[in-house]
Image (cartoon, rainbow, N blue to C red; front, top):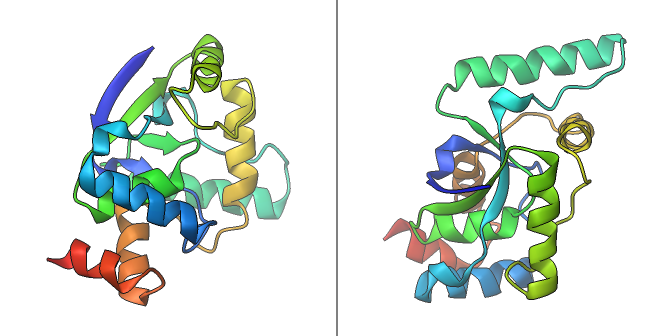
Length: 174
């Protein structure tokens, strides 16, 4: 079990755009702006443990897998795949804070991370119980994306498209 501090361009994020819940983003933004250490770590997997590739042997899956591999090859700074935490990582990026992460290296680490929900150290963890299952879950999620993105590129996209409140955009761009 390791805790790391990463930059937003090091993490591949989910494809929800802008984010699923605008109210949660507002809460996390306020926390990130005033006391970012209060936000729990974001769970990530290092790309060396596997990429989110589809297992089916059909044309769509092959094309998707090629695109994922190409994305990582063309973006060597990306080393981690976010398991959960789009709202936290977006709010931290908007407020120019680094992202504290919990590096999942084993299935036991997943259990350890999920146990932190009980103690209130983390708020939630919407992922399966094994690294293999998480990568398959992310592969299915990313198969619905038109393109892939880092936490930084997704946040920049939200700012440029003005799909978040102006006060967040103003804070980020100052």
